[in-house]
Image: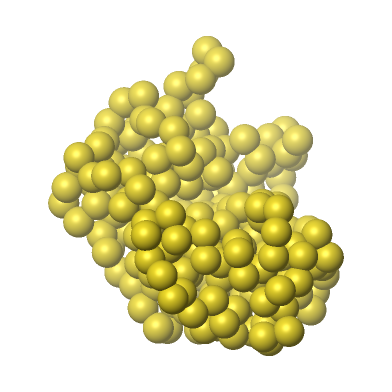
Length: 239
C-alpha cells in the first residue's frame, strides 16, 4: 500500500499541530516516528486513520484521495493500535471477532489471530478484564489483524509495558512486517526506534524535519534541531 501525505496541516486551539507535512509511505517496512511531546506524532496517525480530518492538504491511498474511500474499508486496511489497549467488555474471542462480525462474516477463526500474536487457545474465553497489560496489547493487535490490514499504525504500544512484554510485541511486529504488513510506529524510545525502524521520521513543532533510513538519521542527522533532539537538548518541548 502507498500512503501519501500531501502538504497536510492540522489546526486546533489556535495553533498548528501539524504544518505542511509531505511524505509518501511507499515501501513495505517499519517507519518509526519520533520527536518531542507535542510535535504532532499521534495527530499524524489519527489523520491517516481518518479519526480526524486535515485542515489543509490531502491524504491519498494508492493514488486515491481517502475522502473518496469508505471509512470502514479504510480502517479495515489501515489498523490502529493505541498506547493503552482499549478492549470491549467480554471475552478475548468476542473482541477478536467483533470487526469481521460487524461486516456479516461468520465462522471467524479467532484462534488463528490469537496464535499469531503468541497467545494460546487458553485465552479465547478469558474475560478481558483479567488480562495483563502485555496480554491486552497483544489482543488489541490480534483484533486489528482480524480485519486483514495492509498497514498497522502503532501509537506508543509498548510505553507502559515491562521489558519482556515489549520484546514480545517488537518481535511480533517485525514478523508481521516480514509477512507484508507496513508498520508506522510512534515511539519516544530512541533505542526502540533504532532496533525496529527501517525508516525514521522526525517531527518538531508540527513540521517534518527529516525522513531518512533509520541508521542514517541516528548516525548522521542533517539538521541542527535533529542533532539537539538526539542529544537530549530539546527539553522545552517535553511535557
